[in-house]
Image (cartoon, rainbow, N blue to C red; front, side):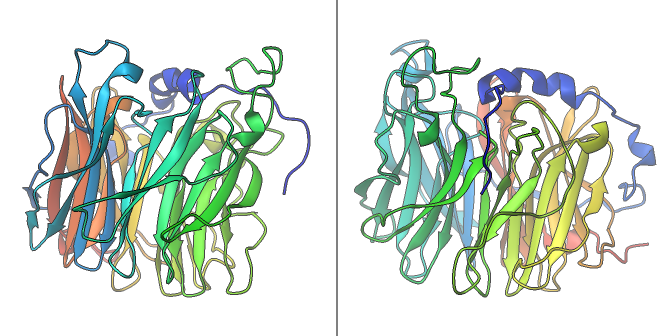
Length: 438
């Protein structure tokens, strides 16, 4: 664990205003990029949109075998107030299997949602078929006063039982950026927990409105009730997403750390079969930034093989990096630079049957954006980078999600062309060039 005196930082809300400016720094022509899509056959894209309405946003994807579950938010009414915190939202989901979407179902609806582009709800499928959903709900009048709320369904989402918050601290502080991983007994939840940032008085705040404490990482097991949560890391980045998987030894959570010199590299904690390990870096990038970049890692696992992909601007260069572990995350190989040019991050990753990683991320030019993908092998070789979909680089376009259903990739993203809408497409996994593509 890390100790010391916290520094004042920019919050997610303040720093997000800088993202378009920072993302334009150091962009180089795509023709000089390693692994460019030149001479690579474009993949066939089969757009198969989910049953989400116009205005839908905040998608999240969970895959269990050949079945995927997509969750998203919809605005029910806009006439309540122009203020987004007074709008009524509904959390909805649909299954995807046999190349078709099920009818959408609503989990919960109300006006107390804390709804935004980066910290999105989710639904996970437990090993026994039980569904667990999470969303963010306001807990007080403060900007950062919201809880992680949970609900459970044992009948495929027909009905839901409210379980309450994932945490029991009772503070009106920030809780979010949740990752859910099925375990034998239920579903394990990981989240960013701001209980140490509680404001005791108006003078006990930083320039962002947070209290002068540190964001922490916590976890709890959820069955038909929430077990006592535990602390995993006592100082991490305030608003970068987390990503968790189950290895052959136990769960592993990857996240963006925050050291006291403002280094914000990607770290991890794992269960080694006996106990939770101490926090450790996936790779020492050395990215120092006095604010949260709202750009967390993605992780995937296949038995003892683990891969972590992430975005960094270490050395003032926009890069996507990836690192593999062959021992359940006990140690990671040297990181591979996948995209050193126009990357904006928002990365996701899966592993194919051969152990190659398939990554997708948001790429940018000075005029537009695109969701691109490539393969990377555990020995560090790369395939060609190919474009999967055009998109906006605005914050409202959110985070693309990538999953595998059968022999296809399922890509989820938010279209932002005046009106937001959640989109989906399938791509044959074989259409993503292998690392031996010439």
